[in-house]
Image 1: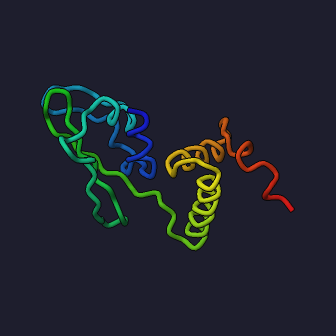
Image 2: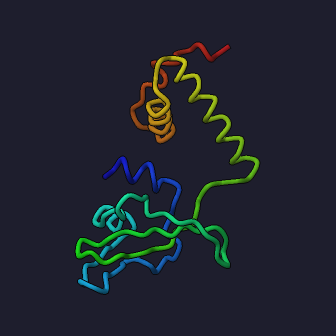
Image 3: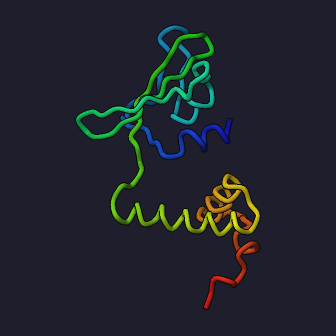
Length: 136
């Protein structure tokens, strides 16, 4: 489930501070956090369960999930993507770094994951793969 969470929900944050804990009105099951809501519910058959839209405060993403009792639950999340010039520049830079790692033999997904680990300060193969070749 961790990979699914990372892939589909990495750019989301809980939109309404008071939306958790969330309770299933059908069975009473309680989800303390957004992470537990995602981990302890099931994807809607054949879909990511994501639906984008807008409200008074901007772009939102609605997330539909099935409780283990079968009831469909929904929560609203805000899109954290930074569409400013600085945010766009960071994404371009990330894509350039990803291309370098792909050139060193990693798949696109492996390169992305290694960069995410690197920028989080976690163990990564980035320095091993790039070495000092980028320094002048």
